[in-house]
Length: 422
Image 1 (tube, one colour):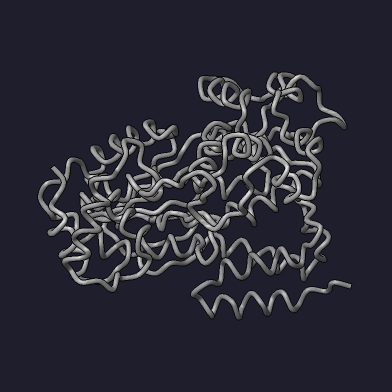
Image 2 (cartoon, one colour):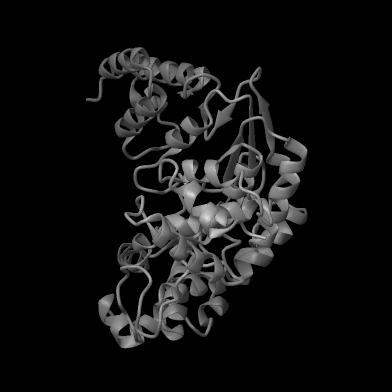
């Protein structure tokens, strides 16, 4: 049985009104049905009140009671359901296909062409009629990866949807990838100086987000079914069979990937896909944050990387995370799980977190050698990857490697200044 509203209100008001503080105070209460229920209730509180509510405790108890008793079986991002013509967040208020088309500077026929509601483009071979350019690559671990880049006009439509819709839907506080104000460094800071770091990886992160799930998110925002389905069509694609047959590699993971790519899915390469994936992972993040709180751990996610730190019960925690990921429509890649105790190097999104967050010494040494060679033999001989803006590329790498290390920054910038770019 869930703790009483009085107990929840008293604990919630006893400290800072933020994710970590609320979880820390609510988790010890007696009566939770499961660890993730703590995360659910904290998410409801933060969704209802962004800041500490200015209410008497009696009134707050009544409102919390309404929140706790009105939770549906499928947990929404907020407890209240929008009515017809109402929107949960300040998204673009498109209530029909004509309004949607006008909002995107299209006519209804063009909208249907880009959204492809009948799946006609699945049967069209690669060529000028396709909205995507597709290219197979191989990840460092050897797994096939399909890059699906939208044509310029569709990419611009996706950016508009991202600005007018996706940007107004709240992202879970545990998400650090593709979120303004958050980065690999903010995730690394959460897990610095911990006795144990556990990193897990989601398999086919974008491919596991289906068109039906995207449409469901948009309906949750308040869009009518036709608008939600059409908007989803702009954001997803289904890979034609000739492209699937050309996939490199073999094995069960490849077969699972091809099965998902054959249906409507988020394309890796579309400008809107990271934001959509973050939003569809909201419930996953909420449940994992609750699980972490129950075992006294810290949780954060960067894209498909799930990171826990603290005094971790590794075996049991990993098994429960795998179960939750499966229940939420994702899958762990067991071979990429990393258990990193404090006496070994602990890396989170490429950042070493044993003491203070910093790029690895090896990354610094490799960049220093590259800059030295650029000064000695010329930058054109060292640009082996063919970066069109090689100088800016080097400046970005210097900024990354030097974060929190001013001495590194000084040395690397001196080396960059010694390069002859004429």
